[in-house]
Image (cartoon, rainbow, N blue to C red):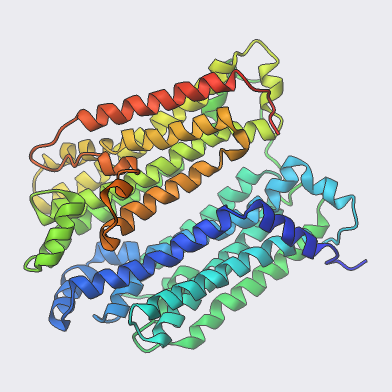
Length: 529
């Protein structure tokens, strides 16, 4: 029997299981760069306007820290920089996909069942990597074709597309290696995300400091140094290929030197007896959610500090461009252009916070499928108490994340404009995004209670909201389509006059969805298959 026996069947199984999720993130991430290019063509039709924007915003240290360097003032160069943070998302999606089909399968016990059949030792890891590599390459090709369709040079379009694809491939291999190191999917995700965060930090330090050598240590830095649309350096693409090969050369031997279900790193044993904090379902939920809430808060605090520092420069850079002033005012709804920029930024933070809410709500499904919910509910713990213990984090978690983001943005922005009043103003504007995030969390709770197998579809609903928010204005979609997103109804608190009525209505809707989820949970079996 070959070490790869059964790989083809596992590939088919993965494609069957991810038939909705995989195409979703590939299409969303492929469309966004094309929308950025179309926006730049419309907003900066002349070289003088692009040069002014580049000098005022694209070269701002805070923008460079977030998105990466810009190597010119052409539409292609500006699009490549604007898409810089998408590479982080590509890397995250890739490593999570591999971990989902390797370590998560082992933790759930399905890998051991498959291993009892005619299955090669390398088949599981190979199948997960092949599917993710193919998704990344498809993403790169679609991105390149979309950029070329907007009128950008083909060489730069395919240079950026390949850079994005190879970035995903590197982090997919990181996910494959992380899956060999720990015995839990959460631990593997933590290692993979830590590596991604370190890569982002190296790129940030290298791009903002006088010496860019740290960026050459980061896969995210390699993508920018391909320099799409500004004299492509094709040889840089060899770096992610070599890094992926090296990581795979380490991951494959480890995958057969350990027992199924075990990791190379020994697990850290906890105390022999549980403390008082674990006496009830809320204490257990706090133990399960606290790590994610901490890291989300830290990440968004750092992001808020960067975005707040760029606000004043963003406001200056678009002054005199009527089209951009109108679009930014429509997105941010503020009297000043800096407020418009901050309003749009906080809207994106609201979407991201909704992702935390969905993730926290779906933790219940993870506990159920892993077999931990059933023995817990076999005790005196009521279903309602168990559900509410997780719902608390699904609803309050976005509040914490948005409050931290608003405070961080307000801190750096108030320093730049010498106005301490901006601190409370930005915090309030961030918290105003919470009711829309609650609606998506409530939908996740409802799906979990009503049709648990469809609960992951909450991520698809979030992706629809992202598409409507990012592309709705550019594509001039009908208002009824835009109204499908709860974020469309969030008032722009940075305006001089706004109504709190939509916030109350969104809150009521979120509570109704959550209550419906609680009701339906009492009417079905646990676990549900």
